[in-house]
Amino acid sequence: MRSIVLLLAATALIGGCDRPSVPKGQANETAALPTLDEAANMAPAPSSSPDTGVDVIGKLVRDHKGDAAPKAGFTGPDGKPLTLASFAGKPVLLNLWATWCGPCKAEMPTLDKVAGEGKLQVVTISQDLDGKAAVDPYLAKAGLKSVKGYTDKELNMSQAFGNPSLPTTILYDSSGKEVWRMLGGMDWASPTARALLAEAK
Image 1 (cartoon, rainbow, N blue to C red):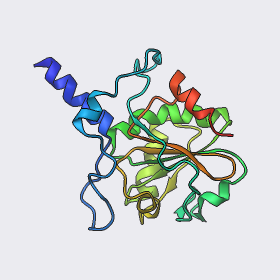
Image 2 (cartoon, rainbow, N blue to C red):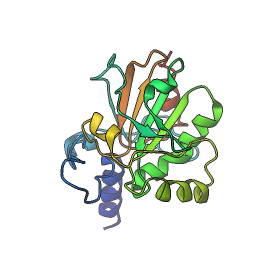
Image 3 (cartoon, rainbow, N blue to C red):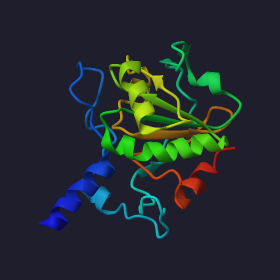
Image 4 (spheres, rainbow, N blue to C red):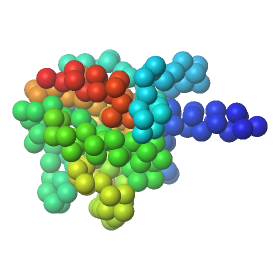
């Protein structure tokens, strides 16, 4: 019985979060979810993080390599409108997440660690429909110091990526071209993540 519970929990982490009920057209609840066969083949890498014991739990996709960052807008922590063009000139790790998404919250401390190192611009854009009212209290309570409260109440960014399940993380190089995307949660402080992040120039 315990092995069944563990298998179900692992499958939920790998697949990411579907969105809660939102108006039609704002979310595709099955987009980017791996099949059970794919999930079964997503074994952790040999090395693992001492923090979580899990190196990789997401699905790496390189189908969009070289694509330009979308022009969709979102809101900065100060309430001003932004696009990814605002971050040009340095590699960007874009993370779509929400406070109601368990795998999103599980990986957030490792994203915070990467952001604090300053080698990449880490742009964590919440897909919470309540915007700052949901995000700011969560970030404060979780003690996250380096990730910022970017929000997207209109889900513009999510729609630009085909409404993927959360979390979805996309790496852009300094010229704004996609390097890869990770579907599902990951330990961003792990050796495998470090190697992937180093691909951005």
